[in-house]
Length: 259
Image (tube, rainbow, N blue to C red):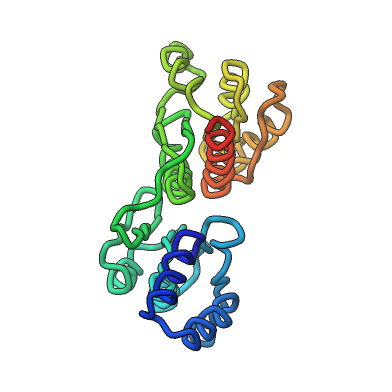
């Protein structure tokens, strides 16, 4: 239940569609949602942070993921499951038929529409950049996350530093964004270059792409941590989720400051 859904719920109480006793019970149960004997869902996170709890799908059984999705839907919250295997798709769609599984980003998303049938308006713009095609799965996880948090998303793909002219042709789009996510493997140089082109926060995501001495993304991580561009910050290897979340919060804040 986010702020918008809470207002709709209180309108139902005022209109007599929900009794005061029932409303008190549901609000009292909201903070701690027991799901089976395996999970305790944070039901009021959307009220505190503006975004509901996200389900990390890796190592969870399909029926566990399906139960968590079902509970989020019952709370009238949007759903994002990350690192989800295809085997869990059926359980998720049973709980949220309007949802969608993306095998590239390994995410399942099911947006919640308000009483008027419309999703909340998008605020701010995030540009998601990746160096090469093999970085796209991590970039798409960032896109799915930024979209859930509520920002507009612009994709700028396959613009690595080995062909710098490809990136320079997209400079105007980069500068229109409120925040930029940059995913790169190999030597991880792209975030520094992007940081030098824009007056925006750049969130660098090292990816586990490269030959042996890349050490599964460690070389890119260390390179990004040593960036000479002062507007570059770094998340963990392959953490498109964290980068997309932070970038969307920045973008939404920038939009509110302009409004």
